[in-house]
Length: 315
Image (tube, rainbow, N blue to C red):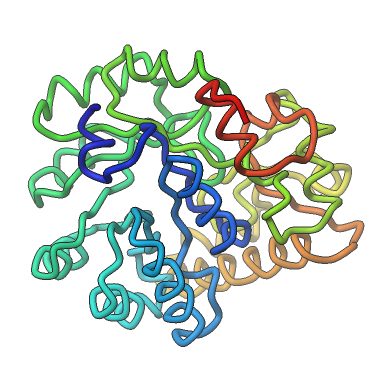
C-alpha cells in the first residue's frame, strides 16, 4: 500500500483520468470494480441536474471516484459545480487550468480530497502552499492539455520539493512497466486516460475508438486551435488540412489587450463544440483528442480488461 492507495482506499495506484466528452459513469463504475479509481469532468454534463444524478449514482458504490473541475475563467459553471460536489460529498476533486484556492478551501470544510494538476515547479509551489491532498504532474506526453516537462525530471523534482505531498504522474503510461517506472521515480500513482477511449463502456463513436486503434504515438500532434492552449489530437487528414497553429489574425486577436479575454472564450467554446461533434457523430471534420499512449491500444475492449492488462491480473 502506498500513499495514493491509502488515501483513496483502492487496490492499485491508478486513476482513470477525467477525459472531456469521453468519461462517463459506466466507465468509472467499471474502473472502481477493477480496483482503481476513476474521474469525470464536470463539464461532461450540460446541466447541473445531470451532474447531480451522476454523483448520486457514483456515491451508491461507496468507493473512490473524482470529479474534475476546470478552475479558470472559461468555466462559468464552476461555482454551481463546486457547490454540488460539496453538497453531495464526492470523494475527491481534480482541479485543472487555474488556481485551485477556492476549491481547496471549500472542500476542506466538507472533508473532500483535492488533487491539483501542475505543469511546472513554479505553479506547483503556489498550489502546495494551499495544502492540497496531492499534486498531479501533467507531463509533456500527457493527452489533452499537456505539460512541457519529462517524467524523469519533473517527478523527482516535485518529490524533493514537496516530500509530504503525494505526486500522481499523468502522461505516457500505457502498460505495467510504465506504471513501475513512474513509481520508481517517486510517484505515488499514475493517471491514465487515452487507453480507455477505445473501451466498450465509452459512449464516443466507433470511428473515434477505431482511430485510437489504428493511429499511434507518432500520429499525435499539438494544436492551439481548439482552446488557445496547446492540446494533443490525432493527426487526421482534416487536422492536417486546417493546420495546428493559429493564423496571423487569430494570433493578433489572442494578444490584443482589449479583446483577448473574450476571444479566448470564443475560441474555447468553438473548439469544444468541434470536439463534441467529432466524438459522437460521423463527420469528415474529425478532431479527436488523445495522447501518445494510443500506441498501446490494439483493439476495443472492456475497462476491466484494460485494467487487468495494466496491473497484470487474470480476467
